Structure formats: C-alpha cells, structure tokens
Amino acid sequence: GAGVSQSPRYKVTKRGQDVALRCDPISGHVSLYWYRQALGQGPEFLTYFNYEAQQDKSGLPNDRFSAERPEGSISTLTIQRTEQRDSAMYRCASSKGQGAGYEQYFGPGTRLTVT
Amino acid sequence: GQNIDQPTEMTATEGAIVQINCTYQTSGFNGLFWYQQHAGEAPTFLSYNVLDGLEEKGRFSSFLSRSKGYSYLLLKELQMKDSASYLCAVKGTGGFKTIFGAGTRLFVKA
Image (cartoon, rainbow over all chains, first blue to last red; front, side, top):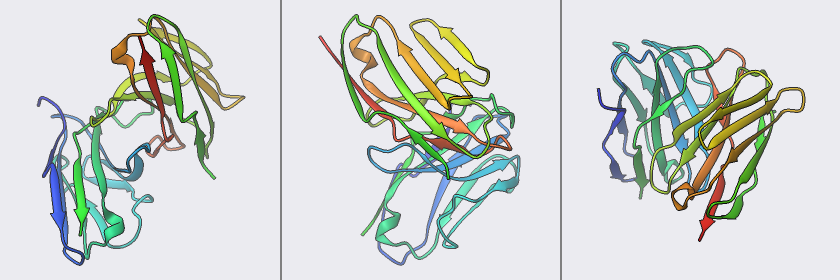
C-alpha cells in the first residue's frame, strides 16, 4: 500500500462513549505500534503487535484501553467510557520487521476530542 | 526509570550548521533513532544508530556514544524547510518499546 492510513482522521465524542480507532499498516509490515501524542510532545508508546500477537501493552494507561490485530494486518484501538483526559492525537506506526533497526512509518493520526 | 532529554527549542540561520543533542537513560538499549516532524504532520525517519560513532546521510549526520548515553543530530547547509521538530527515540530491551523524547523545535531563519 501507499502508506499507513488511519480512520477516522478526526473524532469528537461525548464523555462516557466508546470509540474505536482504526489503523491500516503498510502492506507486508509485520510490526505495528500505537502511540498517543500530546501537542508539543513526542509520541508516547501504548502497545505493540508482531503479526497478530500483542507482545507489549505496557503503555496502555488503564483497562479502558485495548487493542487488537486479529489477522495480523488492520488494527483497532478501542477506548471505553471515554474521559476528557483521553483527548489527544493517536498515531499508528508500522515497520517491516521486529528487529531493533527497523524504522517506523507513521500514519497521519486520529485527533480525538472528548467533550 | 526511562528518560530522554533534548533541548526544547533551537534557532539557526539558513546555510549554517546546527547540532541537536540528546541524552538518554533507558532500561536496555537496542538502538537510537532520529525522526523529523513538521507541524501538523506525522514523524518521518531520519537516522538510526546502534554502534558508537557517526552515521552520515547527505546533509544529516547522527552520532552515538553508548557509554555516555548521548547522541546528536547534525544538520548541515540548513534550509528553511528544515524548520521542524526533531525527535530522539530509543528502543529498549526486547526491541519493541520505543521511547521518544519531547522533541527539539528548530527554527531556521533567513
């Protein structure tokens, strides 16, 4: 594929609602990362998948956050019972391999606003 | 704990050279990355260091000293389009989790 895509690009939701954010990685990329990025800050690691296996979810803030990648391609980050503090840019990135030297390709992000 | 420090902002003149420093303290080390991020856009890869020394790629070079927990990104022949944030990122043990610094906002003036 052309690049990493994410949808929706913008999401406004009311406090207490659930949201699902989608990431479509570059075709053939086995590794997929989710980050949260506040304005003026670097990306904050949330979770990592190798194929369909979620190998690290240590960055998920609490149990309202979950992610899946059932077929090793598209991934969904779900936030349940959203709170205003969840408002942020959520970015997905993919890389060709699992090894240390593989660069990450970032998607355009989903801007989530919780009102 | 894990910590990556970079200067918040730097200003340089078009055509000049600028060095952006990064110091890190992380649990394990599996390589250091530099990414460029223009305002409102996604980060894009610039360089990767895993061994000590200098890696050169066109106008950009990156240096690593693992014993000092230190890296720098060197940008030569600055252009206005180099105005962006530069993110230092370290991959920890296991090669999965990547920790990013807050980024250095570089302003290039004419």
